[in-house]
Length: 414
Image 1 (cartoon, one colour):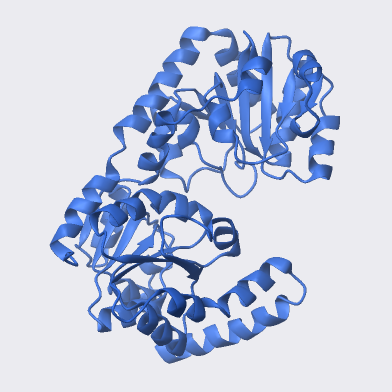
Image 2 (cartoon, rainbow, N blue to C red):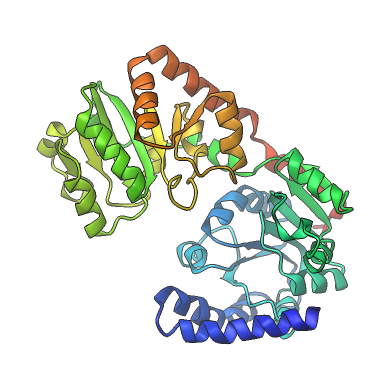
């Protein structure tokens, strides 16, 4: 089965080269991998002691960052090799300051796996949340390299738990230990004979907890908000914006809105601006006078959203009418009620916070209007829901410490 799988990966690799001729993102995927081994060999010597951490993309990197930083502190004599599968992770974080070398992960073929592991020669390996590559896992086990899953989450519909999933079941059995987010994940793994599992939680809680320790001041947002109630709309998609624009255009409340769209291309920003009948200020066109006169502020830039949440009284997190919601933990940390769309079932933190009452899922405009009207008009309700959100975020942190303490039994000694 491994032979057939490897042949299929080779075929896919060749097909992707053709796709790369027409898609810029795929070109990065292909071209970037050509330099992986050279980059490793330029920074990792045979005598170096190393730890390898793999993140599929940007979200997994952010999720695993507290552990990477903890490994840096706990094992100061080791070099950290960080790999990404996706260009959306690598291209954004290739110049990070936590890893000694950051590269694309070579495709999961026997020859590439061998070359990669020979060059990196890790003493410990960590996969963040998911991505299970059978040839990598098999070779790591053959080399007796402890291999861990961080913030893992499993669901019944995954291939590991199907009658036809024996190949992938055998692959993940090569893992040394699973640190999972919830009880369901542990039960699913136990059900296929894996008992080397610990419910440690989600390291993203540790990541967002540090937000409160930073200076989150954004003067122009403070000036824009004034004494109004502020709704911050984070990572919105067109379907989110359609409903929210309708609400904004008809609202009579003393409230202001900040949009931080997922897509900040000029045409997308122009379309959003034109859909709103009230005064709008766009970040790239901002003047003190426009800011003063506006009821809606559009952020056509990146890197400010987290700080902007510190000024919010209510947050709407986008993506729930598309592929799935974006990060709700950042606004939760600031202690504000959260509203999301209907596609959230694969996000354990959203399910939990909805059950607690700090987050609300809406399916249509009527439901959106009802919940926004409630939390805008009723300050006590708004503060209570915000308290639930903050308590939820605070009670689930310190995951990283649990993981690092457990790892001591697998020491690479310093």
